Image 1 (tube, rainbow, N blue to C red):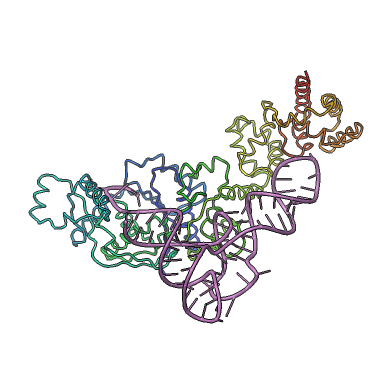
Image 2: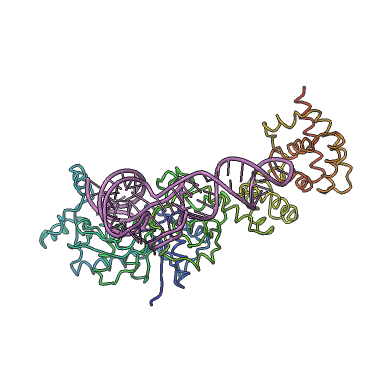
Length: 482
RNA sequence: GCCCCUAUCGUCUAGUGGUUAGGACACCACUCUUUCAAGGUGGCGGCACGGGUUCAAAUCCCGUUGGGGGCACCA
């Protein structure tokens, strides 16, 4: 059996879309599973809509996901001559012909066909041009495109996801393969490249099913056996609409910036339209590679479920060890200016690790560490209004805080065991529930009603900060009572 | 308008003629507990509809409906 070669062919008109990312992943998984090659091809023939910034952003996203491509990336913009050569061959073999119709005229015809509720197909005006007529038009310098001649018949192919698919050629118009500016159109460049790059399996979105028939006709016209095709159903939003900006994040970079881990994205995307067959869902990349097969790809459109993605990210966050997790949280703290520079971190590394570890069970995204853990890094936080109402209005709370502050201040070892024992003893003396001290102190030191266990939190925060913050809270309570 | 794809809990899915239709997310309850999480236990909830084929249909066939995609000198 010949070598498995697949490709991902993004067009650099935007960031890497999650849909494209999933297609890339399925290609990559298939390649790895089959011991094949994963090729990257940039489809930038539309120079107006392509940019080099987007190209590097896309490469970066693919690498972030760990979808490393084999061989050098190919750029279609550098291969325009190849497409022209191929188009000449089709012309010579009478499989294609020059078309002098202007885009404006074609638009008009399409429009009136639509009005007449008829299928908008090219009327083959230029197919019947005589040699002399063509000479005449050429002499006048009329721009000409090249159209592929679609013969009568029917094309059938076996899709690896959808099974046998067929299409009448009467449904396909003579499509343009080379624009009048000499640049190949998508369908043509795609086929030429897939031929040249010896692509064995084309795995792409469902939206290309109708292109597949055109492309198979091109393969046949070139006398080349077409590759295998597998079309993946498109990802939808929860309203079963196309994944668009309105839905929220659509590019991989946005998920990265929100604090999703690449391993989460890979696992989650893999499960969108594919399942291993058993009940496992948390699957490391290695397992995905081992288990992946196109036969198991579902043929119906999956919905992108953000809640499940969050859950899964939490699972992956909790899989990381102290050091790894801290490493990943640091960029987010830096971005929010909660820690200053790499140098300063290195001194605080041990403390930082403790903070991260305290928060980790409550975090689903790396950005959660910033929001839930803010008070560890700065005094600049407000008390949650609702909680103030409840906790700072407890009877004699200012007095209690004062006494607790005094006792905690005199503690020899400021550790969680001592802190807890002291607080509970004090509550006993006062004959109140420990919770009636614990919660107000929580608000005092963090401003929040939620968070890690109070005593470990206070220990990590340190004596100085804690006493300071209790003072601040007492003042606040006294002001409340005025 | 024409062509194509598609249909199991709200969502992701397992299931390939005979299952009490399984799992996960979400949701609810209970539990643990200083809060919130995390964890544990339990629960709610599904074969779109109508015809066939068959002893037997979620599973095969046809239609309807719903959803998605495509019909460019975009990719």
